[in-house]
Length: 243
Image (tube, rainbow, N blue to C red; front, side, top):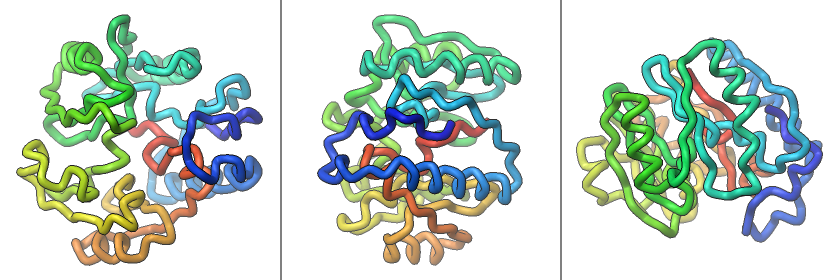
């Protein structure tokens, strides 16, 4: 979903939020969609939602696993209502149900692995949300608890081949202990939000140390300009739902 006209009003405490360029955000989104298509994915685009500033961050609206989708209940009331078009699109391909009160759960908290999920217990996802995710998707869910983080995938993402890229904040967390961890320098921690598609890793541009670490771990890397999404505290995974 391309950013709507209200995108500059996104939820963010980033110091450069006031400098958001909608036109540049849309250009970056178009490049992102082309990259997904070039990597072999069929890209389903939803109509722009001008009434919800954060609606382009579609990942938060659903958690998908094994032919099912849990439609999320956002923690921020201003984001509730974004999920309708996402649910409608996913229901054509997957069995869906909605998370219900008192659960809050957002897809940006969920790391997808072949045999399980890892979810943040965060500002946006609570224990009831994790329980409903586990029950509907019928999958084991490990948790990383930190009430001061917005989403777990801002700090750790799975690359494949048993390897995880992670910021120092969670580099010693026991839930991540079974993975080969690629720990990023603090100055490039934003690059921990990566998206792997068919063995190729999409990463935020401008973080050359992080790029080199992932490349040295054996992955092809494509750098993407995400400047206008960073200003809204969003990143690469936020812009899509893979299934």
